[in-house]
Image (cartoon, rainbow over all chains, first blue to last red; front, side, top):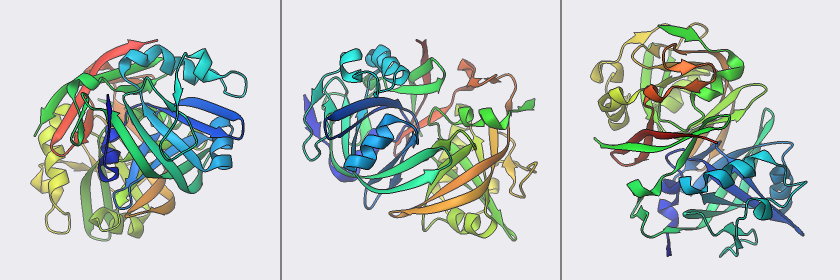
Length: 179
Length: 179
């Protein structure tokens, strides 16, 4: 079961720098891409930023609809995460290719990915050219997560997030330290 | 021993979304802060972005000098990482408070932190207001890392990077997956 995460706490879903699946849609097209280049960028209002290559299909779709969603995959989705980083959505339907289930969002028209453990819906409030990428700044308008894995403001140890070391190599979360 | 990392590969130092220690300096002041809100934002040129609260001393110093450095702490520095997130550099010298050793950079006037396992020197090429933070975009002008821990384009398993779950809780890197 997934529960709503208060918008004020939503940045905790991605605060560790974990790998995301970004969905986008415009007119009759939709897409999903694997993305590691993300960060929260504001507490009040809650804003998050993602850097997407200028040439990517996702950039075209986000520029069209001014919306995107963040979906947080657990490590059990690693093969799907890999597939969504291999192809261009211009050529294949990556939802179908990776066998991911699109589900309706609450406040956006972009579909979310049912298999993921956390979700953030975003409206684009700004975009900045950063070299060969576009840095889209999204305001969080809804967020939810698996109630057994995201407790209060933090992922539980069992959540097994992914981090991208580069190329085909990832790691998941290890030992927890409380200072 | 630390070796130079080619600028084209430098974003791999922070690609996992790990926690950083950011140093800044202007006129006779210097500072260090703990920062989790970071991401690479371009491959050509190699640009990285950091989101710093508008009110932070670091923001004032970076605006003054247009430079900052990224220092990557291993998990063995956790207590120092915590200290550098607790105080304002306006009130205390955090290098002294956390017992961190400032060392000269190659192409910047800002001191780096000797105890860290990787370093990136940045010149600010742009800054964007993102809500209550400033998103500084830095061009990488030098990078180096512990030669036993950063191999070719990737951190080795022994590097033990830190990720911020929120509050006083962090995790380090766990199981590696190669797809």
